[in-house]
Image (cartoon, rainbow, N blue to C red; front, side, top):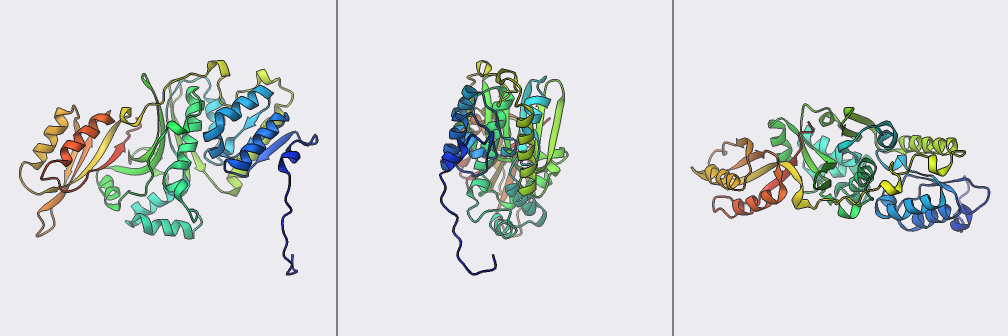
Length: 386
C-alpha cells in the first residue's frame, strides 16, 4: 500500500465464519483465553476439526475443550502448543506408547534459557540480560509470562497429562520464575559442577504426580545442561526405552508453522478413520484417565542447593549441619568461601541429598534463626536426572 490512506481491518463475526459448511478444519492461532476459547468451542460444536498452537488455552480450559471434542468425535491437534517445532506431543502420545513414562524434564521456554545462558557466560545480572533479550526480540515488552515460569507451566501441564493419563491441572502446578535468580548462584553452581536451567518437571511417584517449574541445578555433564540460547529440549525417562531427549527450536514463525502444518496433515490423513479408532488427543481413552493427585509443593522430593551468608567464626558450620542432621537431611557437598580481606562474614553453600521439601522448609527456618546467619537463605532445587 503505497498510498497514505488509513486502512482498517473490518470487524468480522468469527463465530459464523467457523460454522461455514465450506470448512473442515479450523486453525486457531489467536492466543489467549477469550476469543480463542469461543472460536474453538464453536468450531467443535459444528463438527470441525481444530488445530491450535494455544498452550495457555489448553492448560487452563483443556479439560472442557478436550471433552467437547471427544463428544463431537472431532480431532483436536496441538503439536505447536509445546516446544515449537519439536514433535514432543507425537513422541509421547505415539512413539513412546509402549512405555510407562517415569518423568519428564524440559527446557521449554526459550526466553528464559537465553537469559540464563547469557548470565552464566557473561556474568551479567538478570535485569541487564532481560533488556538485551527484549532488544533482540526474545522477550516481550511485558515478559512476565516467560520469566515468571507461567508459559513453561502451561506446557509441562499438558505433557504431564499425556505422560500419566491425568486431567490437565495447570492450576495445581508449583511455579517459580527466574526473576530472583542471582549471578553469584550461577557462578557457585558452575564451581560445583552444575548449571542452572528453568525446568518444567513432572514425575510419577507412589503418592501422586509432581508438577513443577523452577530454576534447577543440573550436573554439567548431562546433555540437557549444554542446551544454550533460545533453544528448547525435553528429556523423557521411560521404563522400556530409558532416556530420550528431544532438542530444537521452541518458538519462532517457521518452527511453529512446521508443527501446525504437521498437525493439519495428520488431520487430513485421519478424515476417514472412525473417531473411536483415532489416537486420543491426550493419549489415553476417557475411561482410562486417572484421578491421580498432583502433589503440593511441600511434598516435592528433590535435592537442594542452599546458600547462606554467615559470620566467619568457629562453630557456625557445625550448628548448621546439626540442624540438617536432626531434620534427617544429609549433605552431599559443602563449599565455604574465604572471606575477603578485612571482612568477617562469608558465604556457605550446601548441597543436600534428596529429601522432602517440608523437611527443608523446617530446617531452613531454624537455620535462619541462628544469630550467626546474617540473611535469608537462597534455596534452589537440584535434579541429577539420572
